[in-house]
Image (cartoon, rainbow, N blue to C red; front, top):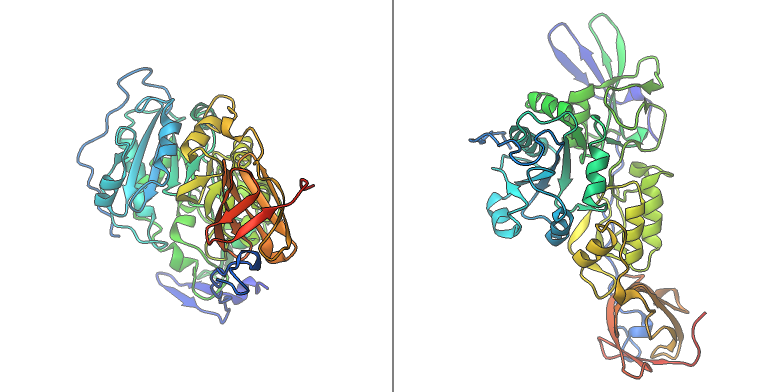
Length: 483
């Protein structure tokens, strides 16, 4: 339960000095989740037992457009990465329909510039900028600001409808380029995905004249989309508000948690919010998805990037939670459980998942593991090209028929197991709760993950009567199809 605000730290302002009075408010200590149980379920067991400081090194100004309409708005994709761009082949397909330097530019800031130059293959699409010093949580804004400064230097005069899109190395686009360009360049506002009200940082400030002010730092997802005006303002503010984590007492034992990049951009553009008198609504200039409401415990603003968080951070009934429910229930999608400290990561996607993402209001999805699998015989890049990036989704020929081993089986303990397979996704359900699994198939091969985390592969025999698992266990087909 959250303690009253006045108990959780008061800033005392004198004429020229600042003194902080700390309270005894505590913060929950989160225990790390135990690792997955990896023992084989009983139906797969052999026998009876289980087997920086910122430096601006931009020596040359960027060139403005030299072909086409020089005043055409551009999208600037600004990648903040460690050593590579995950699933680069998917981005390759996404950019294939656009012209670099006319429709878009893609700049990359790397934690390790040398590693990026070795790992990033499509240098005709991406430009790696010189790295500046960054530190996770405490100063990632130096990297994103370096990207903004580099992008602005390359636009020449630019247009008010240019957009600056900050993406991570684990992000993928889930809309065609043309749709994305049309959407983002239609206005001159910025997109912030605002965390629920309970995630904002609050302090009480007392001034020399005795005035007490309730102040909130608005917490937002760091993957923002900025207008040209806001990008330029953020670059002018480089070096300011570096003390936000100290001012709002983030991660210091109270309820206020977060990182600098989750507060900095909103603060430099709109300031902290004065909640004295309990105002209910803030109308902010060029803030897409507004107004901002102070009593709403859901996400606000405009969330362009899907990510699956725990309810505390994502709310309970919004676009994020609705897509999360679909992906969790999808047998062909593998997504880890979100924790209090980390959002979920995705290691496999299905045709159904990609079509749902395309139908959604989101333009990007994260966190997608590098070499993420697709449920079917196609590669992830091929699936994105057909289902997401084409003008209209093109069905994948390999997913036209159900898996030929679909039906009722007996495991090696003679317990019944039902298997369903369609559109590359597969579900498996036995009598015991531990004998439930989901995964994918490609022709005669299946790959599944059981509820306890155990991963298994099997091959269907030519006659379709036996399923031979990777550890030598054999299941036998029974007569009749499963309901």
